[in-house]
Image (cartoon, rainbow, N blue to C red; front, side):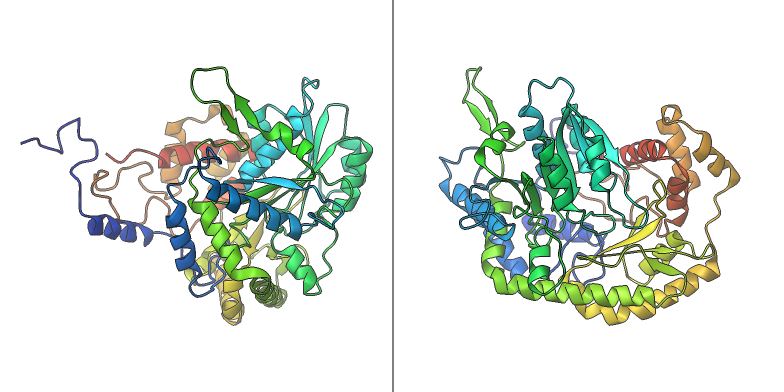
Length: 510
């Protein structure tokens, strides 16, 4: 009889019953932050609609094994994709009867893929430009930097005002040159939730003969509903002349499961360079509108079911709940001495900073987490201070009354604890160490010194057939010291530190 644990030909171990596998998954999931309940202000979007999860899971299962590689083989998926694109286009100022009647689009796996494809389409539309460039506000999503890196396009960042948190259209215009293929603006920016001056930026891009992409991944499915509720939402969609493409994530405020986004172009000619086609090999001719070739129909079907079920009235109701939650959270922040809103909320973000040197934001984040509120700390950048970001969803509305007292208690505890004091050697390291000098061993030593545990260890030795769920991983419950070190480091060093650290986390389980 073969010893499965020793036989190199059996890397997975013996098969186990389905209920055992599901029990393992449930134990692993207990390590995660809560995706429902209105206490996680990042990463997930919870509408708290009874039955919606079950509907999405059922729809996902119906199409999980359908392959988006060939729409002629699976016309159901093509029909659902076209319906999602049509819904997004109508919501964002396109379609029949609009000033942009010929809008077309593609369904992607998420906002990053949508943004990469927007950059690719702009780059490939100008093969005569040997060294293409894109102009972005400094507040634009980091996925544009990723796109520039992958596609070998130069990135020209434009500073944003420390007061308005927006770029000036004049500065965007000054940054546009003969090699610029795309200008970018956000509706809203992720970090602070403010809408860039899209009309002005699109106008200067059009005057220069350059495409203008509006990154509405974060707000595209909520700003139109907020406008219908009376919010003063500035023009940002295809109703704005000069806007050539828009991205909107359906797994954000359309409340579809991960990962579904839509990239829209004003017309088919603008979309054409987005495609990849290849016939010069003996296999099938490859034709892809997006980055992936094989795509599961599961996420698309789940998004289709979610949109069909909620409808206009459902999304309007969810937007109203979210608006009220944002207002309540902002009032809670205003009521705390030593905290300041980075901007008056315009969408679904509440972002605040500290005006008191003795009130350490990173300690405050830990104190809020100890009370069950999971927020997102943002490090300082240029002349912008460190801040705390809250992505607000409809599920937060019933929790708002609990947040204010907990915020006051967390602030009092943070003040009592005092600011984090980096050891002198760590502060010196952050100010003098170059990214090139970092080694995995040095990062492992830093991680141990910061209390990050046995980074990269394989737990109790469990293999794929027996998942380990002991402990909570290498991260400590309190991250203030880690965040303080990252905040003291310049961006390039932050990047390298985190690359090395995540590399240590991502080790095989043997």
